[in-house]
Length: 537
Image (cartoon, rainbow, N blue to C red; front, side):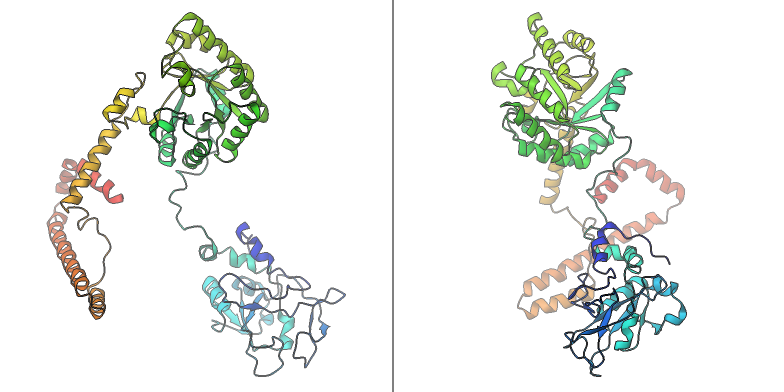
């Protein structure tokens, strides 16, 4: 067994064990070794680089040491981990001193010459560290009782540590990470993730771009699984998630939090974060500072800002020059709702259409990689798209744009309340009525809880043996909790009866022929699928 490379998580630990001419005094092993102190016999080094041991008959580490030949770091040595239970002086010469138990690494022991093995191969039990590495490596070597003559056997520790720490058992016991990371995203980052080059290539080949908003981890996972090109963390989160009537109240700190959640769920899509109202209007420096936060803290790939006024164009230019990609937004700009008098369509007259065109061109000159066109007539959007040399993303702007974007909650039909039905944009197509499904599911849950049909035996999977129930009931009665004891016994009896009934009901079905089973599966497929889905929850 060769000593492989050590994971970076253990490099710091390995540094504590590196063999030097002088080991650090009072080096404590921290990986659960119960305050086992590493021998400090090599604390003092000779002037020639050799290691030292106490002089014969010395009873204190303060006694001037005498040099020992330098210990070789060759991998052919027997690599031992020495630990002792400190009972007075480590170097006490008395015969009453406790012996030192040594656990040898299996990999190093196998590679060492047999004549160097001074002890018999057996399981060591006198040291916590020996027990630990015995569990990792399967066996250990116990050397004879400690003596000054054995200091020469203190070998190079570093070559043995990689094999020990590289073992999967060692990772499990020493890592702070859980064995199964449930919410770490659908998959690792793909090398084929969408970038600005991907967007540009699709634009040049005339392939439409897809963009959908997402505001949290679940919605980001859905967008990612659907293969959407661009995932926008829009300031519309203020309305569809936080319940505001406009997008103005959302703050930059809140947007950063939503961006972080989306970045954990969407690993392939190109991520764009909306700069909220009030974080980039003052001057270009505020705009740059806010954009940098969206990338460094939020994990976004680019930012989006609204408007095409000279101040907004200057802010976009400053952000681009900083090195942050910017998406523009003209037409209906919800952050300007107080000026335009509500959420109203724009560019419905020629002069206003020319103004929107000029703003889009100014944003392109400022360095924006794309522009969102919102709530403008299709002919105006088509003219702007033909004029620009960057993609246009339409939302209520006709079908001639380079791509389309919709709000996650709108296209899924999440909001089914009559109030939301009134404010749902006319340009939004609902591809599902998820809100109705959610409402029906919640009502069914409430009903089943009220009539006590949920959770029932099927969704109560955790059991306790009859003997343990009796022990628990006895303990409760000894504390004067007779009612609690009766409740535990009665519930255990009810669960056992329900399980027996379910087993009896399932017994005839298990004896049916394969044809009958196939027929049952064909007739009850949807119901069976629903039951499986519910059980997985």
